[in-house]
Length: 340
Image 1 (cartoon, helix red, strand yellow):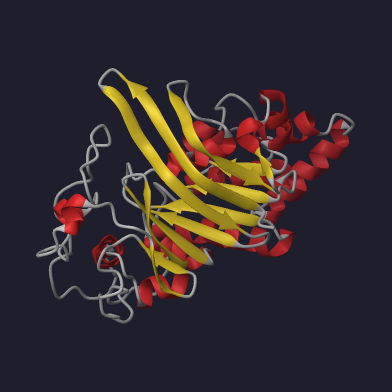
Image 2 (spheres, rainbow, N blue to C red):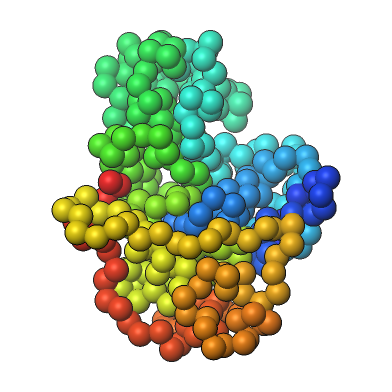
């Protein structure tokens, strides 16, 4: 049995203009100890999907269909009291902006320790303190005993993100959800944060769901990759196949659009147009207005493409997924899969 299984999940937001179809019929699974990267542009449904998993959706959102199974239990059916026992204990989240994830007027030790105290009422103050320091040390915080008593403004952005990761790890969860954990960090610090997540997974045996707009970041950490577009699954396969044999035109465009850091000999590739309005998703394939492969195929404009199996554990929602040639590794020149 998978540790996490999302089945046919659909989420809508009520707005003054009508319902926004943020996630539509999304399914994926994750085994214990494995990692999954979810990739897509802003508005593709990545964050909404994991906020649903954590039961942290805003008040104007509602799940219209589907299940989110954790060890076979549908967490969407748990009471809020039951969910609080899961959140922060069995499943933890690393938010993308450590500037807002941390309370500026509380010491780091207090904020990291609160997670322990909430789930372990028998822990003494000394035990909590020891676990806080040990966990900060495990994520690479130097002189953790002293620095634990500092405030967030005394820490750099990269160090604050380590504190947020420590908060997620301290109760040794089975699953960590990291939402754009390297956003607003420079390339060197990004690489360090990814190393922390990778090492935590190796040391603790936990599973990881990593949200990113950068396929290179995902390639560093994830075993499998889920590409989302307009709230749906566009493509799914392992991380090597996504670069060597991507079959959805959107996936290919994302890979081409990622800049390398070698000598530039041509203009940066961009994806024409913009994502569809989720208030009124067009008939047919949602990517068709931006697609370079749809010419001459009327089905692209009239029929939602099914998920076609194009290889072992490899599916793509494109009418031409089985026709597209293997283009080889599409990694930009000079890029080695790092966070740059």
